Structures are given as structure tokens and as C-alpha cells.
Length: 130
Image (tube, rainbow, N blue to C red; front, side, top):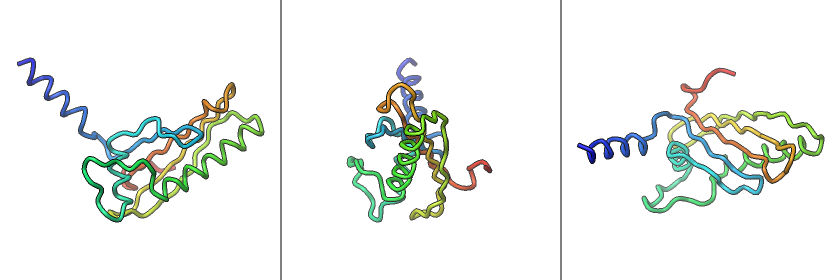
């Protein structure tokens, strides 16, 4: 009985529960966290299907463009000593249809290197109106 509960928990954890993906990046573009749903979205931007064991270390162009736009905003906020968080919205087309990208800039008051960029990827029908 113990092993079946463990297997059930493992299946529940590994299966994405929502159509929303999250990627957390450092100011240098290093991926600090990417969930299974975000990996699924990343694969939707690729023109050819990736090999199952191969995870792309470079984000596709729409995500890199959003990252750079948010990074520029974080840099401006830091230069102005404005520590407020902000968001950039962008709908983009993937091989499966439209995806709503949101990039959150989170400047850190104490150390620039601790500032974070959060990318959230959603199907438009699941996205809340803003």
C-alpha cells in the first residue's frame, strides 16, 4: 500500500495541473526555475519537436524578447531607485495557437543581482482579463 501511494503522489506532482507555465530568471538570463507547464509552452514555439531527453537551454525568440524588454524595465527602475514591481503583457503565436505572455519585473533594493524576472505563459482563454 505504501508504494502505491508514493506512485500516486509522484504522478500527481509530475503532471502539470494547469495550463499556466512559470519561468523565473536572474538578471543575467539564467533560468532559476521552470515548471513542467512552461516546458510544454517552450516546446510549442519550436518548429521541430525536441528529442524527449533534450531540454533546450535557450529560450525561444518570443520569450527572449520578453525577457529583454522586462530586463530593460528593471534596469530603468533600479537606475531611478524605483523599487516597484511591474508587468509587461504580450500575446504571441505558437504552433498551437495564441499564448499570452506576461513578464514581471521585480527590482531588488539591496542588491541588483537579486532582482528577478518572472515569465508567466497562459492560453488566452485561461488568462484573467487585465
